[in-house]
Image (tube, rainbow, N blue to C red):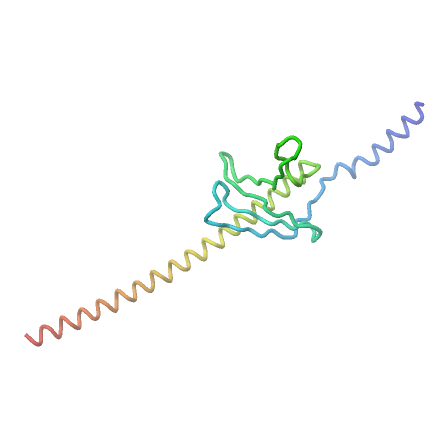
Length: 149
C-alpha cells in the first residue's frame, strides 16, 4: 500500500504544474446592446466563446463597487428559485469572462461618446454658421434701412 501511495503522490506532483496553470477563456466576440428601456441594467451583451457557443442576455449593471456582469438566469420549476443558466467551474474563468465583458462595454461607451461629441460639434458648427448668416442679414438690413430713411 505505501508503494502505491508514493506512485500516486509522484503522479500528482507531476500533474500539478499543468493543472495549476491558469486556464484561458477564449472570448472571441462581445456584442453590447444598449437601450433606453434598460431599467436597472446599463446594457446587455451577447458573448461568443471560441466560436463554439454564444451566451446571450448577459447583463451589465453598476453597483456600489464597479460594473457587475450578471449571467442569464432561469427559474427552477421545483424550487421556484432563479439559477444561472451558464456557469463556470473555476473562479479564474469567471473573472476572465467578466473582464472581457466589462472591457467591451467601456469600449462601446467610449465609441458612443466619441460619436455623440462629434455630432454635437457638427451641430454647434451649424448653429455658428446659422448665427453668422443671421448677423450678416441683420447688418445688410440695417445698412439698407439707414440708406432709405
